[in-house]
Image (cartoon, rainbow, N blue to C red; front, side):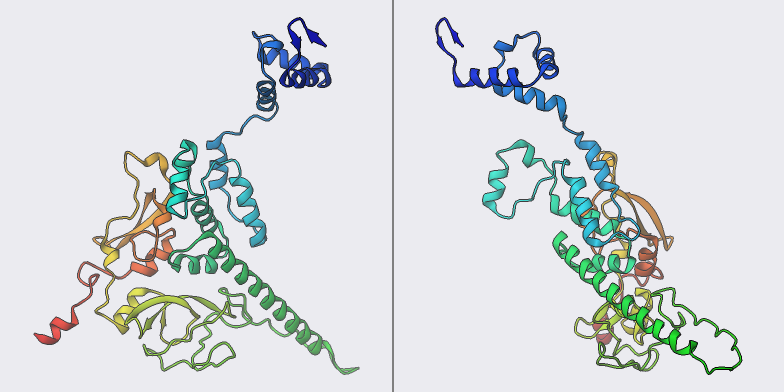
Length: 366
């Protein structure tokens, strides 16, 4: 095939090959898409791009981000599967990767699309922590400073694995006990069924939920509980043990009450920060509970609302709900909480008189 002024160029050959081999239906589609131009006026690359946009239109970025923000972990869904689902939802959201150096930041600034993109790692972390179903895992992640998505994922996966192993051991032990009790002597009268033991609503363990671990020692706990009301020692859990929770205890090293993972009802632990401070360190207070709601939306950024949160109103001494627009900056020392329970446990009981604590040094010198 030759034209009057010479042979076909490589681009013209590729275009001719494409239009010859694409089939009649695709050929008619090309003619319709490039109109009013003729097929000979449109370059090969433009035809390919036009067909790609027609058969595989780009998904709405806003729609994809809405789907991503609603991606909660499903009941029974493993941590690894949940993370894979989040990454799939984020694939078409045009999130950035976040520059880790000045050179990378300068390189990213050359592209407008990248410079305005949201950091993928931060958004994955926020969505993962907010969407995870296990409240104990979630509470522990809330307590972490400088938490990255990878650290959150690694911790949750390890905790999930430990919980599954523990559950497997429990089931084997319970099945063994059932087999032992079912064996009876021949001819013996049928015994009445043994009443089921109380189950702990906190950990599903075979013990009463009010069970106190005072004085208990185990492989995971080298110390023992102290007398009731003592602030010197708390039984700290080294893993997700049989019955643990996120509780407050007095930390002698830091000289204040701090949150950590402890055994339920262990001596020296408190469910509310106010109880720990009142008993162990009245001078500590909780100044952040008197701050205005952190990251609250206003008239200019209300469209960027990421959800609802709770803040402690020091005047009314109540936790109140408000729209949150700066979720990625949340930490344990700001007046913002993603659940009513967390707000009440951290700030409940403080008022305008005791929220700032007391200056013990000045009192001693007066």
